Length: 625
Image (cartoon, rainbow, N blue to C red; front, side):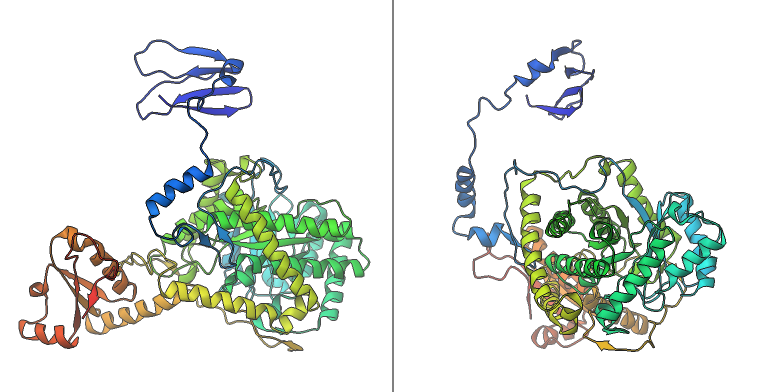
């Protein structure tokens, strides 16, 4: 009978590993063997006796070669790499099996046992309504607010207006010195919002040192996000130093500048590209601050990072861990003792879908888990209806409570770097470090992040990966649940606020121009097809249809019919399921014509499996006529 051991300081508990109900008691420094109900006895052992138990002593140690031999027997002649080895969009190899990385050490990050900040976005264009929502968020569990201004990377069509009056109305009644965190997500028109905030504090005699503010200056943001910059890099660097010195002199603790790599992720870039962009941006800001007369040790504490967390949990965790290792390497190269930087996370815009938006809740949950395990200091969740418009209070509450449940009920933050020592995560982390460092060196050779954007180096690399992603989505190699897989043509609608998107701010001088990095959603091409289907339904009362004549028994056609129905309905074409062609809803006189030419309101598809097993050369899908 198998036993499982649960370990904690001063407590050892053995519990039955079988599914029947039993009883277990636990005492400090003791272990209790659980017995089935009715046994009437509990047997206790000292820790020393438990340590002597060799639970696998009667089994010979298994080797990787033995496992591989068994796998090859199952695969027969199929290639191992093709069937079981995965690859990321950076070309990094992901093995199917990893051993423990015994020599690994935890990556220093968030303070051990401390929760990350639960950050809620405030992006309503009306400052009064934004104030109401901000107060509601803080009263219901949020520990930080992201002030999202119109035109920022994280605006996604909405955002706060710039100007001191709008900021003052937004912050009315909010005690910014009560321990909450503020994160400024800025755009070019709102670049002076931190100065307006400082003036607002001064009017109220609030000590800047008592606040927790991340100001979010990001001089390269405009060139990357919108393809124009109002100043050249030397002038931008000097302006950054001036702003940081001003706020630092007033007593703010910072950080002040952000290396924001969301622009790469939103554009379809890879993990290594995201990391290299963040690293190159941070190094550029570090140099600028040092050249402005700020000591390196102080300058590094003035910089923080923003990364994106998506639905690839393990890759997200590895990415956040890799960032800390990469930045520690930069600190060492500067002659500094590494110390953890502040790393903020936001769930991915590009993974959100308009169709079946409730699945976005699941995607966001996985993303939060990945970022939390990766050591993120603050996490913001995009509401599940973000792609449909400006989210209402319910959607925002779901995003907030997703984090609160993971923190308060799942206790995800209680263990520092829980992925340390896991072979797969350690391998991905190290490979990402190597790939990102190589790209970072390439950026540095061009003259730094601004120069690399100006000549299009970064945009070209991101465009290549974006094209690969979009091709994989179009061919359904990368699945989007609810969109390209398991679509629901009769899905219920969701509510969003009846507020029109805000026009992207323009009008500042374009002293430097470059190709902008687009902000994409991977589901958009399928959503275009679904929108066309909806328009046809509204105009004619019916969607485009395809009749599926399934031959044989359910066991013969179910798998292929399901595949075909998913395929057609992903494009908004309703699949009409029938046992055979005689059950087609087409008029009887039109069936043979439609079967021969495909003419008519609906096209027939035949799905069957005439032989006991599919032949190697037969397509594993229905054959359209």
